[in-house]
Image (cartoon, rainbow, N blue to C red):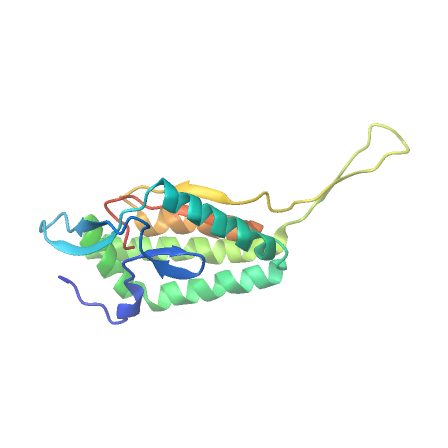
Length: 190
């Protein structure tokens, strides 16, 4: 590894499916290259359609529980994740720099930006209010409730690997949805 992390447990070189870090079904891996040095900084499983179906099925199973979790509990989970990101900010910035080739100062800014989404959506989770719509007839009452729609999916860009993943995942989790994410192949470690 060409960079040093204070907390090496942050660097997982597998896919996170069903609460576990795992390999691809095929067993094949792809190298992650530092664009500034052309050196290999790690490798990750090369996931295929079968792996995607496995991830979607796991997210669908988890949805049954997560969608019934209270807004307060979802908020607490997102706040805990926010604390973990901010506590690990320097390590995450090092990782972003190694994957993207960004200057370290920009990577630090991205980590702060990414963490802000967790904090924002942790608070938004508590505000999933409904509405009362004026009725078209006197004997009717129209109520709108907000509820999770299901498993969400996201494909993220290479240039903001932490910020764009957390922007999407935090929103989905706050709303009570589970998520399947495909990170950019250039920046899968972040």
